[in-house]
Length: 271
Length: 305
Image (tube, rainbow over all chains, first blue to last red; front, side, top):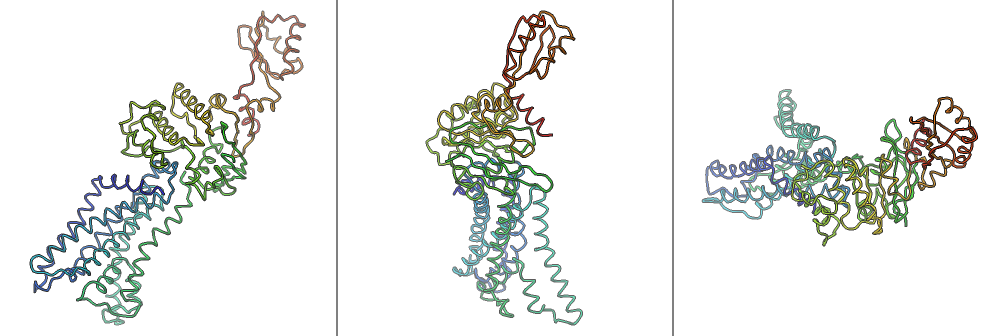
C-alpha cells in the first residue's frame, strides 16, 4: 500500500496553496465568530453550554463547510489526470485506490484539523466566562462536524474522479453545491408556502415529504445534532425522521458518492 | 516464467480497433523492440500493460501477475517510462527519484547515483517542471531504474533526446540487459531498435504482423540484398539491360556511374557475372544487407494496405 506516499505529498502541496489557506480560514473564522456571538444571543448567560451552542453553530456551518469541502476536493485527482503526472505515479507500484485514499486522507485531514481546532477555541469562547462545558456532547458535535466536512470533501473528490478536465470538475462540483445547498432550501421553502397557501398543510410539511427534503446532508447534520447533542432541541415526527435514521443516512452520504465514483474511475481508461 | 505474456489482447474504441487479438510473449532476459508507425497501437498495448487502459478482450501478465487485477504487484518488478506523462509538480529531480525509491521500497539507493547515470546530476535540485523534454525523459528513465527492476518497459524512450542522448539511453539499456533485466521498448525509429534488440515485433493497424529476430526477419523476406556497383561508364540503356537480368528486383542510378540494385541474396554473383558478359566494367562493388528500415517499409507498407 502506497497511499501514505500520496497522502504526504498531497498534504504538503495542498496546505501550501494560498486557496486552501483562504478556504480553511473561512471555516475557522465562521466557527470562531459563532462561538463569540452565541453567548450574546442567549438572554441568560448562565444557560449557555457547549451543548446548546451546537445547534446554533450548525446554522453557521451548513453553507460554508459544503462549499469549502467541494472546493478542496474537486481538483484533487483530475488536475493530475489532466497534466499527466497521474500517469507517472501510476507507473510506479501505486494503485488508483492508493491515489484516492491518499488524497482523501490528506484533504479531509486538513479540513478536520481546522474544524477540530477552531471548534475547540469556539467552545472555549462559549464557556468563558459564564457558560458551562458539556464535554461529551460537544466532542460528539465536533466529530459530527468533521464527518460533515468529510462528506463534502468526498463529494468534491467524487466529482474529480468522474470527469476528465479540471474545468468540468469545477462546473459539476459547484452545480452539486448549488443544488443541494442553495437551491434545495429555496425549493423546500417555496414548497412549504405553496402547500400552506393551497390549504393542504398548516405550514409543516407532511412526514414523508419531510423525509425526502431531509435527505440533504446539511439537514441530516442538523437533525443529528438536535437529536444527540443539543438538550434543548427535540426531533419529532415519524420513526424514519429520527436521529438514528439520519445518522445512517449521514454514513451513506459519507461513503456513497465517493464509492460509486471510484467504481467508475477504477475501470476508466486514463490514456 | 515469461516477462510479458499477452493472450488475444484486443482494444476496441467506439468505432476503431486499436488492437486486434495480439498474442505476444517476451522471455526473461531478452531485449524486445516493439515497432510500428505512429497510431499502430504500440502505446495502447503498453497502456494496457500499465493498466492505464482496460483491454476489451484478452489478458496480459507481467511475470505471471495479471496487469488489470494485480497491477501493483505486476509493476513492483517493473521500471516504466510511459508516454504522455508530466513530471510531478513542485518536486525537484532528486525528489522524483526519492519518490520512486519510496514507492518501490528501494531504500539504500542513492538518488544522486541514479541522476548521474542518466546524466542530469547537475539539475538534481532544480524543479523538474522546468526541465526540457529530453531532461524529463532522462529523469523518468532514472525513476524506472530505481530498485534494479526485472523488466524495463519504455514507451518511445528516445522522444526528445538528441542523437547523443539516444546513444546514452541505448548504452543504459544494454547495461541493464547485461545485469539481467528484460527490456521491452517501443519505437518508430528503426535504427535504435536494430542496435539493441534481440527480437522485434512489428505492429501495424493493431495487428502484430511479425515477431522475429532481426536475422529471421531478413530471411523471411527472401534475404533481400542491396548491391552498390560503380561502373566505368553509365548509359540509360544499361539500366534496362540490368533490370532484365534474372534475380534483379530494382535498379536505380545514384549518379556518378553508380547504381543500386536490389536482388535476392543468391543472385548477387550472377548479376556481376552477367554485367561482365555484357561488357560492362565493374570498377567497385559492395553489398549491403537489407536494413530493418527496408523490412519495416516492406511490412507496414505492403501489408498495411
